[in-house]
Image 1: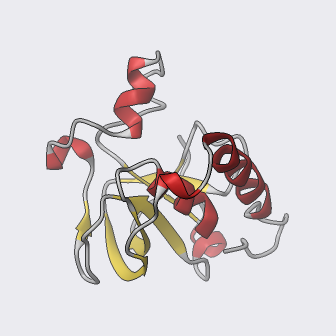
Image 2 (image 1 turned 180 degrees about the vertical axis):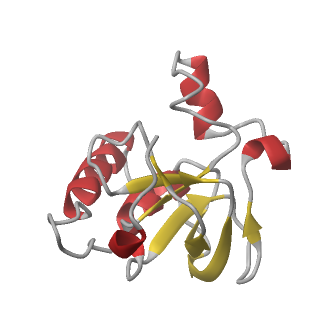
Image 3 (image 1 turned 135 degrees about the horizontal axis):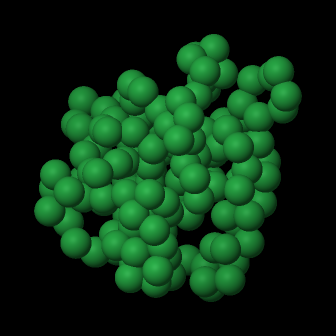
Length: 147
């Protein structure tokens, strides 16, 4: 994995979709630390994803608010957060470079949406939203990431 150049993300906002109930200042920690077993990462591993691509020792963040919203929806009553993170590595599962990142932990800056309900849309609508949001978050070459 490669680290993202700091100048690329210096002005970008980062988002995380995950467990509900966090508040500003709380840490978003990886499943290996929290002991949470039911995660998208564990589901990906059960479906055959390699440990390098679905790491239980990492938190995943994105510059795309709606990308994170979709991941929040896949948690039972998940939440959408704006976060800060230190060192970011490119997410090897993201087909669009510069959109999704893995990090050891993050800190909640603000709660964007405390409850994102999966039942608000059909499954295929969530997947279409993820595709559109990922493409929309693509960072223009030499420009600022969307977010």
